[in-house]
Length: 233
Ligand SMILES: Nc1ncnc2c1ncn2[C@@H]1O[C@H](COP(=O)(O)OP(=O)(O)OP(=O)(O)O)[C@@H](O)[C@H]1O
Image (tube, rainbow, N blue to C red; front, side, top):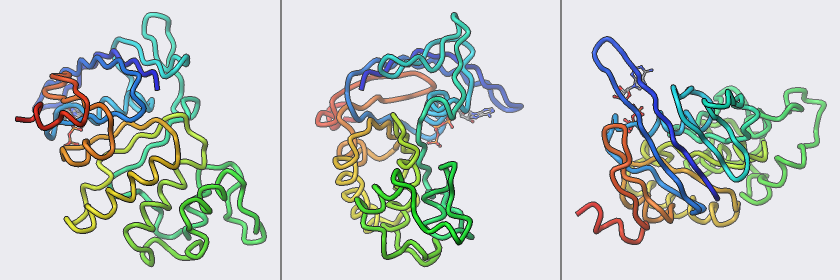
C-alpha cells in the first residue's frame, strides 16, 4: 500500500490539551501503530477512517486523496471504503451471524424471505468457513467465530483499507495467541492493506511488516517489525 498521513489535530477537554502531529509515509502492506495508552493511535486511525477531522494536513491511500485541508478535500467515511474492526468486534447481539455480516450492504438479510446472501458477503462466508453458524447469534459463537464474522462483515463492503483497533486486547492469553495466529492466516488470505493498533509487541511482530512507535501524539520511530525488539529495548 502507498499510504501518506500528515495530520495535525488539537483535542481539548477540561482536563487535557492533546496535540496530535503524525507523519507516516509507507509502501508496506501491513503496518502497526504501537504505543502506550493515550498516545494518539486511535485519533490517527479515526482520522484515516473519516471519523475525526484533522485541523490541517493530508491523507492519501494509493492515488486516492481522503483528506487535504489545503484543497478543501474531506471524503465522507462511506466514500473512503475503509473497514474498521474494533476490540470487541461490535457484532449486534440481536442479529444472527448472517444479518451481522450483511449489515453494511444495502441489501441486508433482515427480510426472512430474502434467502440469498449477496456475493460480496458469501465470498467471505466461504473463505472463513462460516456457513454452519450463519443462523447463530453472537452469544452462541466462539471467540474465533466472532472474529471471523466481524471480519467478514468488515470485508463485505469491499474496503480498500482495513483498520484493526486492538482486535485481540480483550482476550485472555491462550485465546489471544490462538486468534493472533488465526488473524495472521486471514490477513494472508484477504490481500487488503491493514493498519493495526496495538500495545502488544507480539501483535505488531506477527501482524505487521512495519511498526510506527507512537508517543505523545507523534511518531517516535519506525522500524521493520522483525527489528521491533531492538526498538523496544
Ligand atoms: N474527543 C476527545 N476529546 C478530548 N480529548 C480526547 C478525545 N479523544 C481522545 N482524546 C485524548 O487524546 C489522547 C489520545 O487518545 P487516543 O484515543 O488516540 O489514544 P490511544 O493511543 O488510542 O490510547 P488507547 O491505547 O488507550 O486506546 C488521549 O490523551 C485522550 O484523552
